[in-house]
Image 1: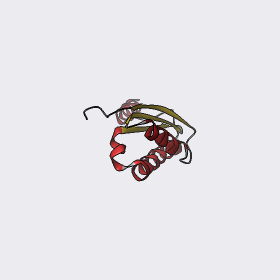
Image 2 (image 1 turned 135 degrees about the horizontal axis):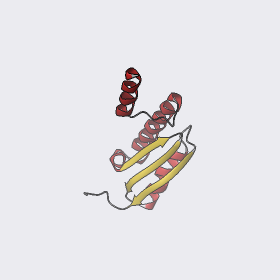
Image 3 (image 1 turned 135 degrees about the vertical axis):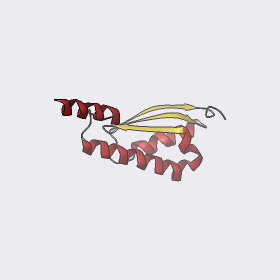
Image 4 (image 1 turned 90 degrees about the horizontal axis):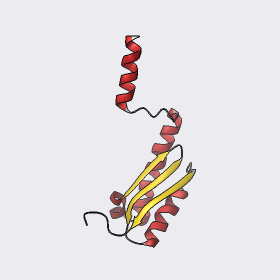
Length: 100
């Protein structure tokens, strides 16, 4: 029983994502990496730090800020065209990044 409690605590501290299978977690990491890579090459490296990409079960959430509406559309299109993306939630704001 003590071992089970220790395992549960260790799992909680590491941040287990129990709503995803290990394969889905790998897919989500791959999706995020692909989107960030395409953003760097297609939109520009300076955009990458201002855009947060989170993927869970193939649902990508974009947040942060972009310079204009065209950049916002381009970021969303890039995310939609990455393999294994199920849906894109666009929470991007148009305007200068905070602190700039």
